[in-house]
Length: 483
Image (cartoon, rainbow, N blue to C red):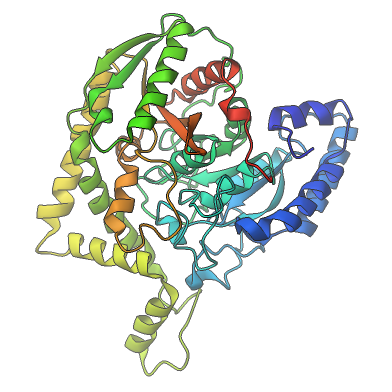
């Protein structure tokens, strides 16, 4: 049963081939057996999962149906979950049990999804490798010596290892798409505002967006359907109708205009990945797509702009973690200043501290105009580049990452080299666009992804292209040895 996709699980439950309780117990046993190798979970919620599975079976017995009713998933450990530890993979929140459900958690529970637990991640979603977690690094199931990508690396590793069919993630600068690429999954970052951020512990509020990680575009469509929708509790939520994301998966790609930015094929790209990207372009051409070379001239400024804006917002968002109201508090503080200083120094790891310092510096009185304001101007230029490009093409295609997964620890002494792994993904977050990564081949036995970008609220178009590609390729069907 562990090899079944979400779509196959929905059909199996509908046909009474197995129950949600049977499936849930099978996957929980598999997690207990295999996850010690991966470290993909922070908290398992076995009792809750079995209770939810029994409830889903009862709802089906009463005539209810639904693609997510009884389907096992897991949540990245920054979605608040009532009564369950929600740690953000940080010592700061190691003892925090959320007093409410995030909107995403509540919506999926209402749809009947069964939550098996909370997945490991980079601390406060800050990282590209899932190495900054207080609970230890997550291993890539394709090679346990390599990273799975981040910050949603726990969700990605668990799905790739067939511990469960799908999981939620969040994407601030590529944190769904990049781990999807490095673990042979399909991962979708929706349009900013498409999925509620209420109850999703913030890293960078103008960039963060929740989305699905699964093995296929079809499964991403199912999970996104349950996650998306306007939320009056979230001031950044967009009141936009939610289409049936599965409805147009089989639309022909004939005449679809695909733009390929010249800037995506710079010297920083591994030539073997470039070859796989070109192979995927040829495959889409066979399906009737029309390829056009385009330009995104301000892409070269994306990394510096992002690494000013995101840390600036992080320094503001993380100021609430002060040892007073909740979270980690130091022992025997001398006074209030000592309480603040030691609680934060002990509670936050090195990567989080680094980004808080950078952000606070960029926002300081003498440097706000020189750094933060300039970065926001660059952000507008990048958005304008995409608006112009989408006047010429329907979808933009390129690599998801410049390199395959690297060895654990290989970039720890050089954080900037890790930041450069986000070069192809962060532009979508700066512009607020939807983006999807899909499996496209292997380099040295490690998975490689191809990224698709579309205009605002065109997630259905991305899912359609990826689904048609997956009907004609088999990269997404391959699973790591031993799992």
